[in-house]
Amino acid sequence: MPLTVTALPALSDNYIWLLRAPDGRLAVCDPGEAGPVVAAVEAAGSKLDLILLTHHHGDHVDGVAALVARYGSKVMGAKADAHRLPALDIVVEPGQTADVLGVPVKVLASDGHTLGHIAYHFPDCGILLCGDTLFSLGCGRLLEGTAADMFASLRLLAGLPPETLVCCGHEYTVSNARFALTVEPENAALRARAEQATAQRAEGRATVPTTIGQELETNPFLRAKDVEALARIRSAKDNFR
Image (tube, rainbow, N blue to C red; front, side):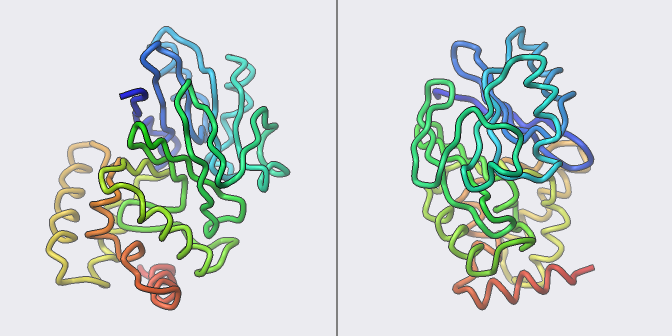
């Protein structure tokens, strides 16, 4: 595989995603804090070439300045979000193919959670870095976009190859499973996934990455048939306790 991906736990429930090329070069996606990245880079005896950003929220960008100061890393992010992201060296737009550590990445529109949110799909590696758009058994809150925006974003991601690794921004699987089971209580694959996630967390293990195929079987947001259905499910989740 041209790139490998590793989850770096950060903050209370975030994941920073570390990409490693065969030649040892490194990149990260959405560093909400610098410490976990510095520890990983130093352990690898390498340096950090590139920082990819999906959206502007602090828990995804607050580590950027320290990492740029330490490693001189380049920063990649969306043109539409550039006015509220850390300073960008590489500006990208949905539909564009960019280069990350010598590997092509397709930039995907992912509006919904925020406007200007993007995702990064590495077709040659089967990796999707999706920030806060698609979660394991969930999707992001509609803080800026509409249900129609999120539905379009999720439909785009649903069309990726089923084996694609879904590298999302947070460890939400167990709580998302509790809600998902109220939407599809008879979904056997969902029940099995909920049990697996509970066991993984009890052992201190991450529940992600998941895959597009697994989410298509178990995630009620990705399985929503139309905008209205997604809006109903999202509203119910927002009020779920």
